[in-house]
Structures are given as structure tokens and as C-alpha cells.
Image (cartoon, rainbow, N blue to C red; front, side, top):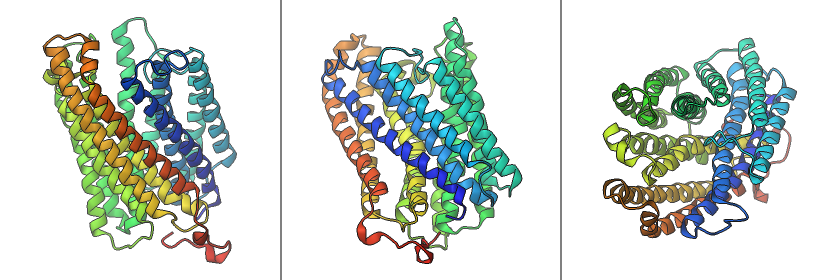
Length: 449
């Protein structure tokens, strides 16, 4: 760690890990309800558990992004963060808003729009926190060195924060409502978040491989161009069936097929940088998570997204377990694994310790990734059967759900493996073996820092 203000990132990372644990446990409970539908039906209904599961996912990923920005921007800008107190105020607002949203959900108060269920006061709190963040990091970058990494990161963070304004727009017309809803949901995860992912991945590979900055920056700009080119008009693949003009069937189909390209480029970028790299960095766990993120993102967001993005296929498959398969693998690869890569790299230095518990950390990678891959295959098979039985043969929804029970049992087993891996990761990050503790002082330098 080179700058004292980077320590603020540790608080963000710890809060993110806590929410990560809650999120996967919520997902495991939701998975069990598919097997035993009356489980907790009166105490904690499925729709509330699902809200907690998805909202916790979004918030902890954002906390990870914010923490990553507070860690890497000082190094890239070669100066301290503009205001550390503002960074802590932002974190407090986000944590209070998160707790307030959960309490609201538990008593039945929510907005009713999927992923945007937060009560109005929580939405305003998130907006204020985002404005504080943008002011803080922008002032830091403007006063310091400008790099491609900070430029792309700021572009992604500014755009995702501005798009949050559409969360407040809720017109009575259902077509308009869904259109504005997708402005947030799609243009976050398939456009602006990709810029954040690319910049953080570039920073990690710069530190872990030792490749020249110029090479990394060229790749980064190409990835950004393809992400925005495909992602913005690719939003149209959600417009097929919500009442918008029919030309979106073709616009959405054509441009959403291009959305595979930035993820393929990110995967290629990661492996080429490691191949060209001259540095033997001691933090092997962070490198594994970085490569794993780019690879799984390509398959989850790219390949599995392409499988059912064309309107002729999506007409039958939309809203089935195929969608769930794509959603789980893409979020895990593109954003979960990326955040865990950043945590693995930065937290040892933030805590003034050598990379620690790396074997447990890497074991958690393989456990979570294997569990998520198996879950994806199970849900893909379940969705294919569901599509045929329900959408082609016209069987009743609940009859089909009963016929898919074996797949739901296997999905729950895969989810248990993911939860075990997540808890193992959290343990490996927060608990240090005694013999790995480094005495404070000059000897506390981390190899490869």
C-alpha cells in the first residue's frame, strides 16, 4: 500500500464480504424453496427472500466497485483521495440504506419493481452516496495523473450513477415502465459495469503480470469500444415482448450477438497479458481469480447469453430456467469473481500482511466455480425441458415445475457448494494463520507490492 487514504477501501471490502455471505445464504434458502415450496412460507415468503438475495448481490458488488476505485485511483493518480471523511460518509449511507431496505422488505414495504424494490428514501440515499463518490474520485483524478484505467473507470462509474436516475421514473404505462427499467438493469450490467470490469481487470493484470502499461491500455480501449457499441443497442433484446416497435426484434438480435465480443476480448486479454508477463507475483490467488473472472464471464455473459438472445429463440425461452442459468453464471464470472480478485489482491496489503491462506483462497475459487458451473448446466437442462413442455406443448406451469424437481434438487446441491466456497473465501480473507503474520515496521513490506 503506497497511500494512507487507500485504507478506506478495506472498510468497503469488509462490508461487501458481509453482504456477500448474506446474499449466498439467501440464495441457498431460495433454492431449497424450489424443492420444498412451503418452507418458511409464512415467516419469510419466497418473494422477500428473492429480494434480499438479488438486492444484496447488487449492493455488495457496488461496494466492491467503490472500494476498488478508492484503492486503485490513488495509485493511478499518484495522490491521496480528495476526502477520506466523505468516503466514510458514503459508506455509512449505503450501509444504512441497505439495512433500511431489508427491514422494509421484511415488513412488506417495497417498490414492486424487480431489482428496484428499494423504498423511495433508500433510492435517494443511494443517489446521494453516488454523488458523493463521483465528486470524491473525480476531484482526485482531476488533480493527479490521468491514465486509461482511471478514464475508463470514471466513465463507467459516472454512467452507472447517472442511469440510476431512471430508477425513480415509474410511469403508469407498462411498456414505458419496462423500457426505463431496462435502462437501469441492462445498461448497468451489459454496458457501464463492463467498463468498470475492464478497468479493474486491467489494473490487476498491470500489477500481477508486469506487462507494459501501453499494451494494456490499447487492449482496454478496444474492449471499451466494443462493449459500448454492442451493449447500448443490445438492450433491444429485452424490448421484444414489452410493446415496443417490432424493429427492436432485429436491432436487439443483431447487436446483442455482438455482446459476446467484449467478453471474448477480456478473456483473451487476460491470458495474453499473463503469457507476455515478466513478473512472478507472489499473490497467485489474485491471478487465479482474475483469469477465472474473464473466462467465466465469457461463457456466462457471452455464450449463455447468445444461446437465447435471438428473438426466434427468446420467444419460447424468455423467463424460463435458461434465463436463470445465464444470469447466475454471467454475474458470477463478470462481477463476483472480479470483486473477489480485487479483494484477494488488495486486502493483504491493506492489512499489512503477505498474501495469506492462498491455498484456502484458491480452493474456494474451484469450489465456487465448479458449483456455479454445475448449477448452470442443471438450470440449462431444466430450462430446455421447461421451454418444450410449457411453451411448446402447453402444459400448466405448476405441472412442469413438479416435473423439474430432480433438477431443483441438483441445483440446491450446487448452491450448497457455492455457499461453502464463499464462506471459505471469507475465512481465507479475514483470518490469518499465525505463522504468516509479519511484524510491523520496515520488514512489513509485501513482496510484489
